[in-house]
Length: 122
Image (cartoon, rainbow, N blue to C red):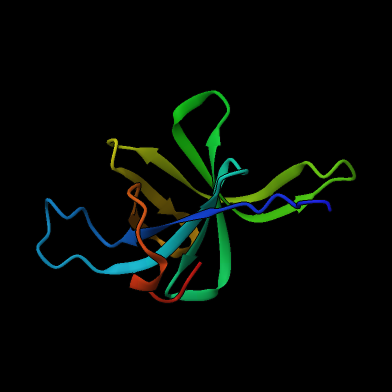
């Protein structure tokens, strides 16, 4: 019998502000990351049907690019397109996200959480 590899996922919160600076931080979205992929899939509550993709820049592990498109080539390699923002790792706990077209600044919390604690899921 052949066993297929089942990837696992980790879920993350996207927050309106940094908890240390603001008392009432809102959850403005969620993200997930699969163990076999090198990017996050982002979903924002303001546009719940759209997916964004956060990929670490090849030349800097502290800088990221937010893309609105993803495809696979004939060799099943992932290709990202339509950059719409950027991310910057500001601590071991947070990546600051800026999405240009939405004029949005928010924070991806790098501590995974239980999926049942937040809705909608990414």
